[in-house]
Structures are given as structure tokens and as C-alpha cells.
Image (cartoon, rainbow, N blue to C red; front, side, top):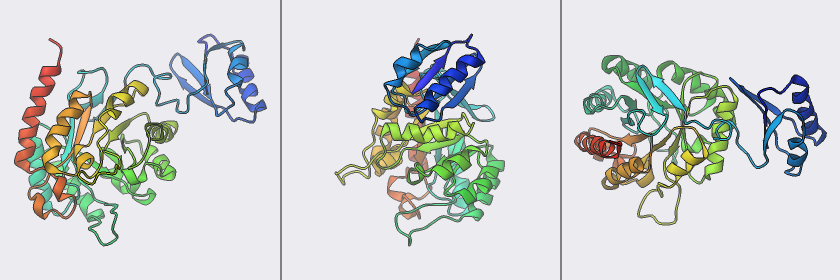
Length: 338
């Protein structure tokens, strides 16, 4: 439940609302931003009518389970600065499409450098590459770890690209934050509350991927944990959810993109690589995500996908990525109002 206070509400008004929550056994949380003050708590919906009559109360939203990520609290779409000269979100068409491209996993300096040069040549500004790789099988390639972070730092310095890489647990948030411009929280960790809080406190933008079987509400509640720690820079990622048909790796929920933008002010990106698991389907689903209003894309590419140590079947070749970027630029131009 969210109680929005009148701009002229007094401290006594605030205390009365807090006391009403506490009398019902709820612990209210205070939310402040310039010109706005609200309290939220889990409470019986029947309390809404009582709260609405209290002095200083402007509005009561009885069914809000997430507050800071909602448009109730933040009606305007957020624009997040990912790095020097690179932003994502805001009103439709206000910023360039943020394309985050690179290998699923960092394998070597030559692999990463070749890929980064292709990313930069295409006009994209963000390089992805996994240093720590949570895998379904304990015998699969788990990434190069700290060594990969050093390679990412070296390539970042050489190309000027911004780096997006995943923090897999609380212990590696610090080392990842030293290198990364954006910290990714993977689908397996979307509900890892301790990791969400620790990553939030590092002060870097967070790319939060939807869990493999997570609802939209669960994704927004995960974002709420980050926002509640005082980090306003969260980008949501639709990366496909599990279905029953093995023809694709996942079911890419294109409808989730405009739905998240209806429910939340946070930027939304699509991940057609994990969303399909099939290289041939990635371009079509990337364009579908952009047409649905995505603020950006997360795309896996590799110099030699057939010999990649991780996710080769869903990775575009460097040439295929260059072609897709031309198509995406044409699509965005066609979607821009005259």
C-alpha cells in the first residue's frame, strides 16, 4: 500500500499515517524525492479508507506491491546514464538505442579484442562479456574469472567501449564494479536478495535480467530491492522465459517490453539471444523488440560461434552483427516521428 502525502503535509500528518500502519502491525517505509513524500507498507486493504481520511494524505494506492519502480511514484520514464555520453530510457526516441554486444564468455584476449573492434565499428557503445559464468552443468566452462576482468579492462582502455559484465555472487561485486560500467544480475540470481542489495550499494547502474520463470511482478519486486538501497539506475531485461516447446531455448516475451513500460518508469532491453537460443532467429526477434519499444538490446556475438566455449548456437557472427546493426538503424529511423 502506498500513501502519497500532500506537498503541504506536516510532520504531525506523517506521524499519524505511520501510527495507523503500526497499529495494524505494519512497519511503514518513507520515500522522499523533491516535492514528493510517501509512505508504503504491507497492510490490509481495508486500512486504505481510514488512511484516506487523515490530514495531509493526498492519495492512497491500496494494491501497490512495488513502489519505487512504479509509475505511481515516478510517472516520467527514467533516463539512466550508463557511462560517458551513453544514456538509456526516457521518452520514446529521446535517446539512441543502447546496444550491448559481445561474447557470452571472455575466452581470450584475441577473441575479446576482435569482438570489441567489431562492436565499435558497428556504432554500438557497450561491450558485454562474462568473466564469471553460472552454468547449468558444473562441468561446463565457468569463465576465466579475475583474468577475464583484466582482459575487459585492457580492451575497454583500447577501444573506449563501456563494459557490461555479470556479478555472480556478493564476493565478486567489488572486483566487477572496479571494471564494469554496468553490473549485470543474471536470470539465475534475480531473486538473490543479498546479491541485489550488495550490487545496489556499489553505485553502478544495474542490468537486471528476468528470471527463467519469473512473473512481471517478481521482476519489478527484484528491481525494488535495488531501488530501496538508494540506487536509482536499474535497467530491466526481458531474456525469455521457459516454455514447453524445445524448438527454441526460451519463449521471448515481447509483450513484456511494453507491459513493463506501462507498469514502470525503468528502461527495458530485450535479449533475443537467450530469448530464442537460435542464431537464425536473433535478428528477427531483435527487430521485434525494437518495434515493441525496447530501449536497448543485449546481443551475443563471437568471431567463431561454432567453436565458442559458451552459447555458440545463439551467437551472431561479427559480420551478421554488422548487418543487423544496419537493419536496426533503418528500423529506428522509420519509427522516428517526422
